[in-house]
Image (tube, rainbow, N blue to C red; front, side):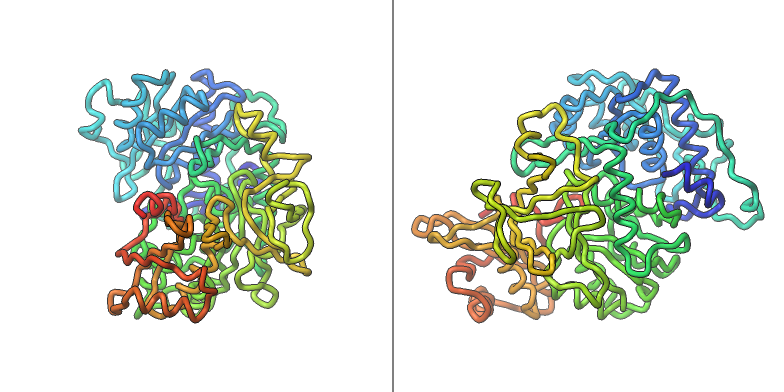
Length: 542
């Protein structure tokens, strides 16, 4: 994807990061240099290399260098504990780790137990400039990386105290007219579309994480499919806010790979902060914003009094978790942009569904399958009997974006991929027109006195209460019912609400067995790195 884009748009801005920007030609040049250095280290086709860093240009460079060699990116959250890191490195067998400087202590704590051939450090300061001074935490030989990534790219990009990985200060000259440079690439093993490109670990809430093997075919197909999701299409003039973390499959495809495929500009945000993102809107006027529901809630709160800053937005995607209709409507009224809810999962690279434009979308639905994708509903118990329109069962997916399987887990692969169909583990229904509706995760289903209660349905009602900002529902142990419904609620600071008021609100809109029997007010809800509410954490505090 990158090589084709640099041919078409060599001087177009590929990425903006902390006051600096780089063109697609500069991005490609840096990628080629890192490929050469990795090749010199002996990196082979199919070898796994772990990436552990926040959003930054270095992430994009390393990602495309690794996949360009035919090696495999192992995505690791920068928030991983030593225990979590040890597990993924041990399971994947990645001998090389590329990590952000402040995370090196965690890496070296694990290195004592997990053999690592090479540790490569990445450094940048708050201003976007590379840190010349080694920080205290990496001052000792034992905590210093074997090499700094920027030392590889300096030889290619040129020495400058104001450059980080070839990221330059905003251009004012006329060098943009130069033709695309085509750096010499190292000898590469032929890369086939069905070779694994990424190991995306998933399933930590249902047991040990498993590495979903995503191939080059999967990733290219999903980037192409995603490019057709936006009403009016995508042009090179579009600018996308990349606030979702690249290590997450949603951001990898819908932010990074989609941007590179189409040639638009990535406005890279290291970590989502609503006020900082608002500042980015005011300065750069982005047109596209992929996010999760909690991001839309946070931006709506931050935009109070100056929502004009969001006027450049024309389209948004929401995924990662169900989007409450009230949140969607409020954000659209605030910005004038259309917010399209979709659906995906790591095993499908991840996008499988999206709503069409505002005139055809159906609130509450995840929409229609993306191009070249099939979906059907089967009985959740036997996993085989196909169900009719509006009948609830397990959602199955088939398409070019569906993973090759789970890394070194043939049994789990056979259970999840059956005759080419991916068993998602989600309870859903499909209406007469093909629109799908996620009812809930199979594992999130609450069975109260024998009745099935789906958390999303209860949460939708809670979100419509004028005082509620966030809500999450889980099952709590009950000696009489087996399970009962418990709601965790965050209310606006200007409102005072009682448990009884919330329960009465639910009684107006829900059957008696669905009404929460327990209400817990909180200042916030626990969330994952991508902003998804962590129900498992709430369950442990029930």
